[in-house]
Image (cartoon, rainbow, N blue to C red):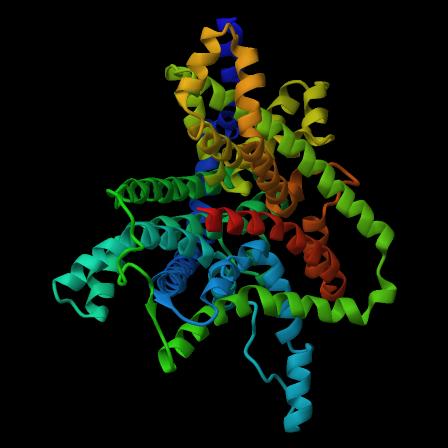
Length: 534
């Protein structure tokens, strides 16, 4: 039984290790040709990829830190009209994939779009009336308005849990309100802001849809170009290794920031102090707070949805609902299958860790938890490289067909990326089950299966349902891995929206894009309810 348990853990660990290991071992194939490829890339495309990615990341980091911190401080430290509404409304941009926001703004603001057409007709002018949207600056705005909720969530939690009683102490020492905010509240939120910025930058580096559609030369688009256009696996693997190294640095910074969040929490009631409650605003300060919270919601959710509804309502009679049902069916099938597998694997790992996991168990859990940080482009290269090696060594091997001709390959990629999402949710559920329940069940004669089925499972239903929902929605929105690993005739909503937008058929891309937004609203609603319950 123990050997079977260890074999299962090793198999789960290999799910994550194989793609990353394949990318790293590509450097073992070093020869004169590989050196020439690397020199050629260093002289041509690598400086551009590095400069563009670095500039984009710096701009996004400043933007999400500013927007996320300001909005979190506004709804946590102040009371103004609409504060309760903005507490959950500021989460809405999480429901919209960044590439969908890019399609929406491009369709509305491009030269042939309704905005510039209205300006030319109104002013009697000709030519371009607005600057080009598809550039690094436009991508920065898209990423900031869609990724700031990472900073907002963590900063809001840090300020809500730790700021009130310390600001009360500062007030008793005579510090004015502005000084209490600058010298007490914001320094408390600094580790949370750093962790949120690191998460936003991981998403920025992993993005393919926005960078590809806007024609921006980042590491992710470079990986796909090296593989598909140059037909050069070594170059793609070397770019993937560089991207993986950058992500590893960001992940280390995020973990360090999370450790710094472990401050002592206040004990006892907080509601007894007037200063422990949000400071009430009125007049211009209240209007300013409302404006600061309204702009991100407008730019990140309301306007993109309205922009997509416009062509959809105008051309509703020409929509191919049959094909849309097929795309939605493919997305749902892949999402359900991946969510079920991810939850089962997460339950296995979390249960093994709860039993006092050994070194192997802790190592596999740690590996599975790192999967979400691995960009989809790196996973694609890591899965296709060993398939290519196997095809050269054994051309008749059925393994190549099972990975590339069925859903096995794309589901594998989903598990590498999103198993950590399910694992975190299941572990949070286990954390709320006292260890005494396990001891009592064992004293009554329950074995491992009985303990899981009759004690743990009834208490874990909500956590596993939340885990399945989060993985399901993430799978539906995933673009890079699905684009290359999906079998023939298995187009999903994300892939179709990207292809239609790339072909400048933005009106037709509105329907699958809106479907992705509706699916993305489900975890946002769940998250908002969880935060309110807490």
